[in-house]
Length: 327
Image (cartoon, rainbow, N blue to C red):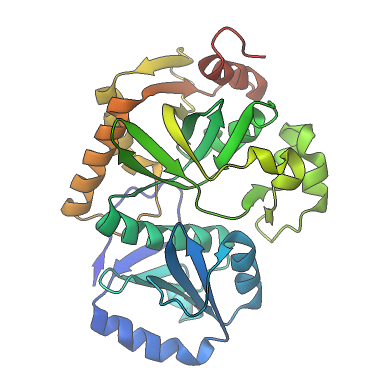
């Protein structure tokens, strides 16, 4: 049993890698707790939820696309109750792609770990990689927003969605692959997971927030199509720009264009801003470095310091997307 090494990035759970034999022991141990079994389509992977908690099964069904229950699963998540001392612990078998989430009460982590299991399958077998951030499209040109917690990824993603020419592939997690000279980015979820304070920043989303059912963490799964229209939700785009957000009061520079080497150094230093990656072996790190290196050769990267008021930072981001016409 080997703990997965990574920078915490504000995530308070522990991942431990286990053998397939230990996986079978845990499956036997928690079998009696499983009341709900739900298979879902996560970008072509069949990911199966096994849990005894109805609210988790319900939100899972709202988050992911349905898949035929006759299809065999590529990966599995047991969301179960274990010993109290193992709260927010994850046991993961990389061979069978099976994760056990013990005593989790925050659905956002459950959803992210489901995406990470799918990402582990896609990374190993299909050269498709996970990006933990937003992916938007402007006039057929894709852009993604990454950054550390608190830098404003969600705030500025939804700020940009107030513009009628901005469409969305994902607000939190997407998959990408190298395709010749391009980087193709694909959506990962059916619906979106928003914060209760979204409308306090951008009042245009009042209507959506008022009708959402929020959990104890102040989050809700919503159908964003009801707020911005079906035509502005896309299944894929071609990435052309990457924006890395940070909050650094000691840095007087608000926007700078990055070289590929500078951007890769920032991404590596922050574990690609994805604290939910289940496996971080030397082999996996080589795969990710090669992919992100190829990505950065094909796009333009920027760093934006969001220490100003949200509307001011939003205008700086729009200047990158709409040069000379940021309104």
